[in-house]
Image (cartoon, rainbow, N blue to C red; front, side):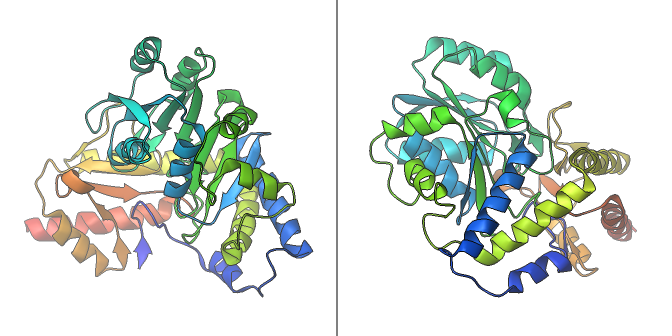
Length: 356
């Protein structure tokens, strides 16, 4: 089954082979060498000199870590879909104060909204989802980051789960304090790891925030990082695969990789419109990694997915309240335009057969 769902994404055979390498001790010199290699490559990917850490968890763990390590007074959560809303709920579940800038699903967060709210409140942390997987929308990270940096002492944390390694993110240029992702999307790896960059300001803030826990304590990450180690036994096979995949990414070339994702997105959007559908994301903010198609033709999405699966490919239904109202086609990771064309041709065939 070839996956075109918004995660986990398709993992090629040579990457899967890395998972079967002989095991090594996580406190060994061999592991420390592997860990340091991966860190430096991640810094290159993110255009950063900040610390970069590896977590054996999903990205949700690191999202909660941002809450527990960085929010002292109150956070401002920028909510435009399911996953940005989940981050907001995390803040409340951790017993912290939070306000929201909230827009309808499919609409983008505008910089002016953020500036207006930050001017009114006593916030110390902003949480932004860069690429909202539930709606196929990409917020304007560059413009929003400019706004946040007008407010001294306010840290900016970015969920780049479905954009990192697929859309260009220049961490240092943007002044991001935390930029996080998991590896089962644009990295095209099996699930099991999250990676994140962390600024000196974020690490300094965390020192003064109580009740950070242990597993996701930024200070504990930093302590073990100084020894080229992780806090606890990590998912070593996935780290082998990550190291290998980063080499493949650089071999392709970062700019070429980002351009490939953009070309696939353009093709998917054109296909949707040509088929008589509409796009769910606000015009000008459509994602380059996942296209969310508005079901304007009222097809039976679940049945269409089932029929396409019988042909060896799978795409995604709408998320939560968007189920059957939309469907999602991922074009990220190691997928190529030719792969996407085969999927879309098959969806078109199935739709024609059903109409006939």
